[in-house]
Amino acid sequence: MGMRSRIKKTSIFILVVVLTTLLASFLPSYAEDAAEGSAEESVVDIIDRNPEASYILYDTEKGQVLLNKDIHLPVNASMLSRMMTCLIALENHSLTDKITASYTSVSSDGNFWIKKGTTYTVDALVNTALIGNAENAAKLLSENTEIKTVNSSENSFAAYMNEKAIKYGMNDTFFTSADGSSSEFQKTTAYDTVIFLKHALLNTTFKKIYCSPVAVSWGGIIMNNPNDIVMENTTFTLGGGTGKYNNTESTLAVTYYMNNNNKSPADRRNIIMAIYGLDSENIEPVQKQLLDKYHKDWVKVLYREKDDVVSILTLGTQNLSLVATNDVCFYAPADDTDYIENITFSYAEGYAPDVIQAPVYATTPICVVRYQLKDKTVFDVTLCAQNTILSERTTVNKMAGLISQYPEIFLTIFVLCLATMIFALRKIYWHFALKV
Image 1 (cartoon, rainbow, N blue to C red):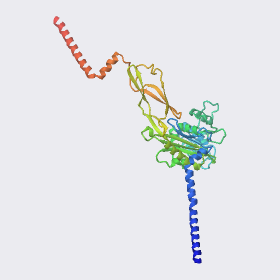
Image 2 (tube, rainbow, N blue to C red; image 1 turned 135 degrees about the vertical axis):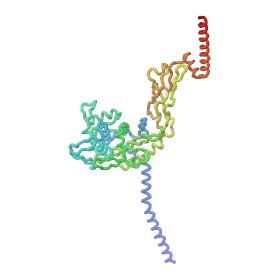
Image 3 (cartoon, one colour; image 1 turned 90 degrees about the horizontal axis):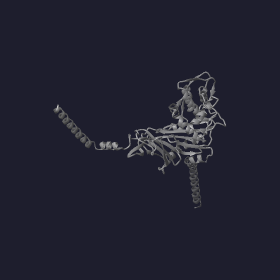
Image 4 (cartoon, rainbow, N blue to C red; image 1 turned 90 degrees about the vertical axis):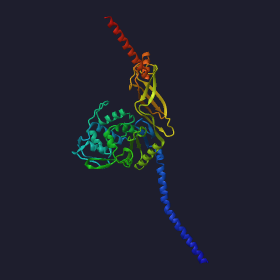
């Protein structure tokens, strides 16, 4: 019995050891999976706790800031300076223009060589600067683009970049170089970045290159857009890039999220998202989560359609209908679609309700209606006259109105009057004819 008892205890011990070992082998992978899931779920919280991180989701149509964190925090402007340089080059060159390098240079990541005496097209240089983040390509473009500043005595390229930034309303941006060279004075913000892109994307050539998933550099080098979310998109047109300077720090990740294929104004999208201050591993997860949050928290409201009657003015006894000249759309929180806080009207000279007089012709711009949303976004819509009013309701106009309302009766009266007149004239004619 003693031997059997010892064997039994030994068998139980071995079984426990085996089970413990197997369980332990599964625990690390389970813990890693749980940690990864937790990190994926809380990445937005991580960026919110990062004092150097800033981001913005911006609607280019109405200028609404939909999601944001520290959008006026000063950040590195290296990549933005190269983007501005490319835009200026495209405004002053055709893509087929050729530039010959006067010196040899290599990009900071070592991927793109420019050789002295070699000729490059503007197309190849812009592609490489925008998609390849090659600062030497941007520098060569700036050195061979003639510009003239307006407010600076020094006709330098950087001075022109700053003039353009001020014109766009980028009030917290200052450029010191065309290629993004490090400088303590060169700065921008997440907000200014989306303001720049709002204007830059109006340039169709810039937009085509920037929104391309791939581009071609000189020598036939194929470059993938560094923004991974652009590469995997299948539904919407996306554009963007991520950039580093001196290959040491992530300076910017930008995504342009656009869908104008749908005919309904409420389904169209023109969103720019900019993120600063994250390492490359967190950029794509944050981009995706911010887009998911945007879809969940915001809805696009079609408040008025083009040609809808927005207001009615009274001229005597007549009504003048004022219609919207374009669709009135804006974003509102999903739980608060009644998002208009204030509406005001500014009338053109001579068309205010207390002074307007006939004649007023259809399509005449009468006033501008200004909408202010609860998030303080303000936008204007022009209202035009829908109908024509030639004069106020005098006796003659009243009679004309009755004629248009009862044409059959007045036609009968007219025919009878005409017949009576003809009969009277005929009788008078024969009266005088017989006398003669």
